[in-house]
Length: 298
Image (cartoon, rainbow, N blue to C red; front, top):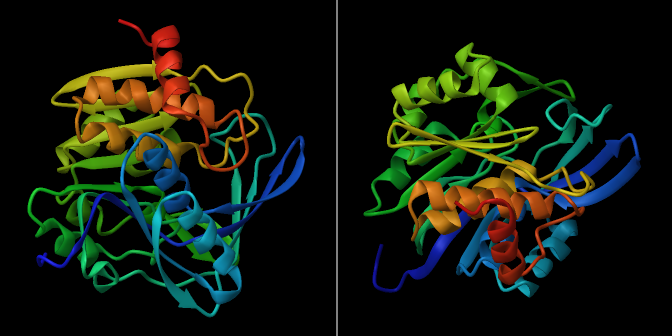
């Protein structure tokens, strides 16, 4: 990047989603998108964060809200925002149905032009939002930690339904990644492994340096040949939507200065607190630190 680049700790990439969330407790509406949840988590933990996103001009309030929280936002306006319905028929957060009525289009590498960062976290919601060549372009940046979420590649829009399909570019993308984020269902589908440690090993064998795997009970970190397990300790599941995005946002935020094992503690604690409340993470660093000392002390 040039000397005139705007520099951040982390840039969060992904389309805004206008979410309808249906649970056994009722129907709620939220401003979603993986980049939104992830950036708020990282910012709350002290990072200088930016968001690159696509959305409709009519949803510009989202850009203003992101900026109001001290996060710079670089929007690309499209005819429609991504309109998503997330239906949880039971209390199992790993089981849900997803529907999309419209999409905001594809984010290009050029949309990050003039922006420099120590980390780039890509959190798309469905295939086509970010293409494989995006990662090859970002990999050319010096010293950047590059992360991506499997959900934006295994989910494919057929009609209005999001369905899982094989990911043809998986090895091509994984070779570029420092941190791969997945959940247990996605991991089993892509690797054929029901055991989460075996699934993580499979992803690592394809090139991803670290695996961050969320499941209904907690998270698994696989790094440097080792496995680290952390259970969630949440008082409710009211804020289950955005769980995985908060998980990766907080993990990368701390991974910039801490080893995988310690970054995993921060991720588990931040995510536990997030899933108690609908919306983006809005707790203090002190609350997270206290939570770590209570639940994840060695």
